[in-house]
Amino acid sequence: MRAFATFLLLLGGLPWLSGCIRKMPERPEGIDYRQEMRQFVIRIGDYARGLRPDFLLVPQNGAELLAAEGGDSSSPAETYLEAINGQAQESLFFGYSADDRPTPAEATQELLSYLQLGQRYGLTILVTDYCSTPEKVDSSYVWNRRLGFVSFAADHRELDDIPAYPHPLPGENARDIRRLGQVSNFLYLINPDNRFSSAEEFVSAVAATNYDLVILDLFFDGQPLSAEQIARLRRKANGGRRLLLGYMSIGQAEDYRYYWKSEWNHKQPDWLDREDPNWPGNYFVKYWEPEWQAIIYGDSTSYTARLIFAGLDGAYLDIIDAFEFFEQTGPAATP
Image 1: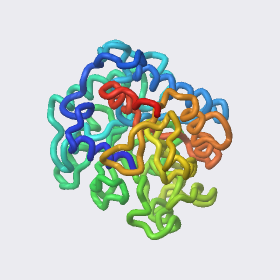
Image 2: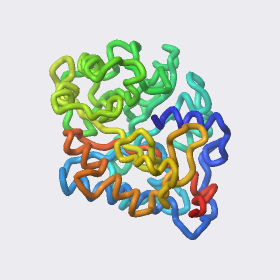
Image 3: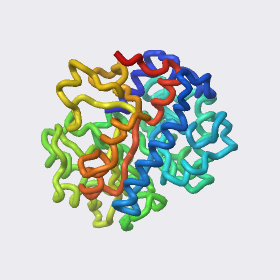
Image 4: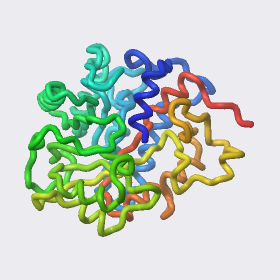
């Protein structure tokens, strides 16, 4: 899954992710990669809310998109801000360069300038810090809470477990959660088949928790969770209702997904770009191309529709920051 890949990219020292967040460079090929990603997210929202008006959209990373052209965090990208309900950010305080290590202060400050812009526009800010030492876990929760952010301290970069610490959960409650702004805590668990032997074991483990929000993958070992399993996941152990967001990568295609065609292994479609060198089987996509967007939204077979028809409350959008890859390298030439 993609959160782990982002960490590998950072370790690999690739220029579009190293150091502090960069201001927008020259655009090769005349494509405005940032605006194309904004428009993609807006279209996903328009489609989803035509089916379910209260469907939630939460992009992960790529917080620079919250600001208008030029990267000035004081200038909001208002249409984009209106299309999303929250903004998620990895490694705000811990995990930027290595697990359980503090994020450099300059990187934190740069990210905060964008996240607080979104917060001023009513977005719920969800932060995932990668730390496991109890003192650092405590610091992550305290620092994020002071900023009005909702956070999760992930003790495994692979996002494949339910942390044993802290207990009880920060902000644990028995309320029925129906809006993102009501969330006091969340669980981010998108690789359950790493540690759980079956979907049933995974569902039972999550159902025994009291998180207000769970970010999950609709698919376990390639098979979608059932309606009965989704219904169980929606209930906290204390009886309260929680929100469920389905993970969806929109900046890369994954060769284990239902939409992947075997012939693409030999002849790639034009919209499929280079393989992620740090995550075999994951390919950057020319996300502005209609053929890829049709996989993500537009009809009952699309990924977004599957999340909606499964009864999830929203989509957690990953690889939003693919625009940085294309700004740095440009798209691959079509064979």
